Image (cartoon, rainbow, N blue to C red; front, side, top):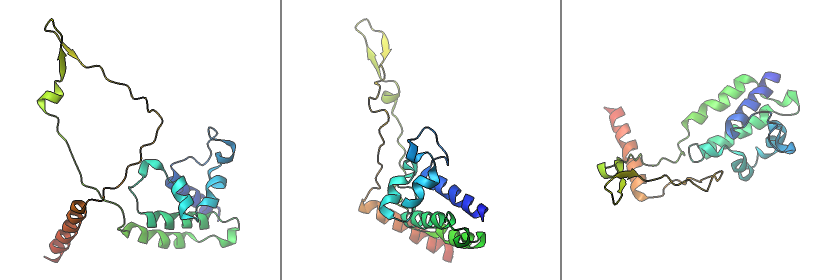
Length: 168
């Protein structure tokens, strides 16, 4: 049953993006399992502990199911933990969740003018513009999923095309 507990910790590490023991964190957050386990059963609290680097790139329903499974695996009573076959049966359907927000893929190409943007001094010498340093170091940017009708219709079109292709 310790393997099941350890697997719960691995799931927790995947959800949070943190190490199981991190001495650089405040005292109450050093042990990941002790700090995060109480928060796994509450969807509001779960969003606070999720890895911010994967924000918007995962199924919220799938993350909640994975968090509930991690909570179950890390039960304080070993007899109440699931078997690994139950864990596998619980995880398998998570790959089929379709509520992952999909945005359009956008690639921009710089023009010749952008690539060779230079200031010309009075003497005729070319000088590259100095880079401005960002003063917002350490701030987390929240990337939101676009809510444009165009994106949804594009997504629906792709789904319809894949269904049509599969039927032929």
